[in-house]
Image (cartoon, rainbow, N blue to C red; front, top):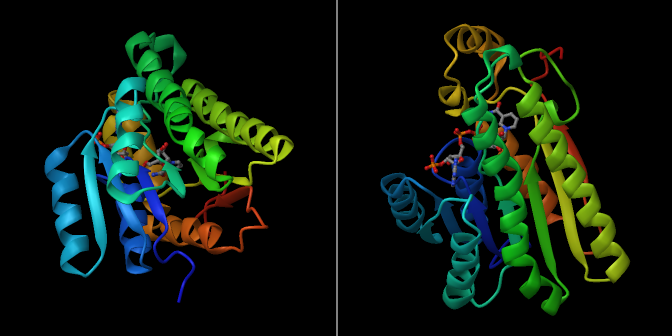
Length: 248
Ligand SMILES: NC(=O)c1ccc[n+]([C@@H]2O[C@H](COP(=O)([O-])OP(=O)(O)OC[C@H]3O[C@@H](n4cnc5c(N)ncnc54)[C@H](OP(=O)(O)O)[C@@H]3O)[C@@H](O)[C@H]2O)c1
């Protein structure tokens, strides 16, 4: 039996792509899931699919940019399942464009979802984890959290921030002896709905070309599952997962 059996896992951004694939992978290994995102129809369909296959899932409609809603998500999970073992901090957007296009609204949105949303989720789930001296935070950074490229400046900035938050959280929890594990996951090109968040036509075309080598989201789900499955005295802190043929 996998040690994922009966672990209570919150997944933000569970309505598509990597979040959805991770939900299916962990449900198949017996996790109890709370699926979170804004599109209720998608969450309900996924919950129904998981339950029909014998798994356990609930869903909660949340916008990760609201700290109040993230606190409600944590409270809902504790009411439904009594504990929170893992947070897959995955919700994110990538409306890339050159800085010279001055898409200030999109910069704000990326900062709100990709950075503040990640912090709000951590703030919501860690108090009960610290009390139990057990927990696992899995943050979705990106290869863009390690590299910087033209047009990706703000997105790269947000993903570098996620990497910094992961490492800072890891050090603080290790120092405090809370036994909370932290994993920073940095995918390369993965097939999902992420490119739909790009409003700039030229940038979108260029990224679609780059994404011809993209791998399926279930590849990332398996890596996340691997990190959770490890014995509690070991933490996989950093994973970079590219398509084999991706250069940058
Ligand atoms: N695909 C890639 O190549 C790739 C590479 C590196 C890193 N990543 C990272 O992986 C994560 C997942 O992306 P993906 O590729 O799976 O993209 P995706 O298919 O577009 O999924 C993004 C998810 O985030 C949710 N989301 C967006 N804004 C939200 C908000 N304000 N509140 C709550 N949920 C929100 C979306 O759900 P709703 O719209 O229903 O709210 C959706 O479920 C992101 O952090 C992304 O940056 C992806």
